Length: 214
Image 1 (cartoon, rainbow, N blue to C red):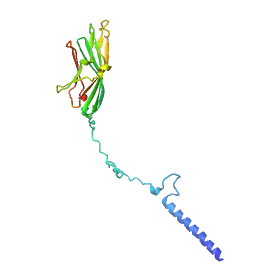
Image 2 (tube, rainbow, N blue to C red):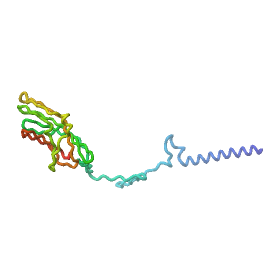
Image 3 (cartoon, rainbow, N blue to C red):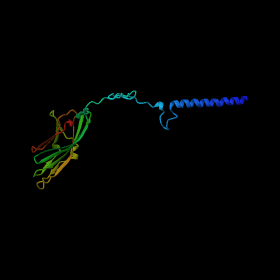
Image 4 (cartoon, rainbow, N blue to C red):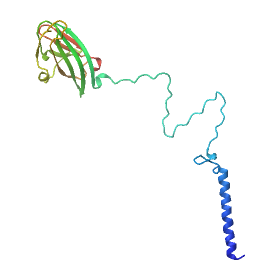
């Protein structure tokens, strides 16, 4: 056998030995018997039989994650922010009647601006009597629990002018009505707010505002 033939045999023998070694390694790892897409057997953990009544071990939380609190019973509701410290808008449908006049506060909103509170109230005045009634937004005011009185903003007169409300045409029918928006600029700290409508004929209608308005 020549030198070239001897070297060729060594190369072939080396390839065979490498192939046999690879087969042995893959066979030991279970990759040959695995189905396409299946994980190698050596990477699949075998579940350990658990005795009856033994609790499952806790799953460790990921690194850096905050531990989750364990819920016990019913959680209390979240505390809502204090009404006087937030903007408010809601429907009211509050009604007061007297002297043949019906006052309805349909809705209100409050907007905070520094140490002031701007309150807007959408009101309706309806004649429920048998004679004509003149209504004037200047008769409205806002009072607070500290004895303070707050007049309507000057711009209200332009949007809600005085009106003469005729009486009902017949019993059971609605009388003529007028409605508009009243705005008041008052201190943010005012509490116990009440809308008041008072005429020169001693008709006094009052509607307290909900606590969240002040």
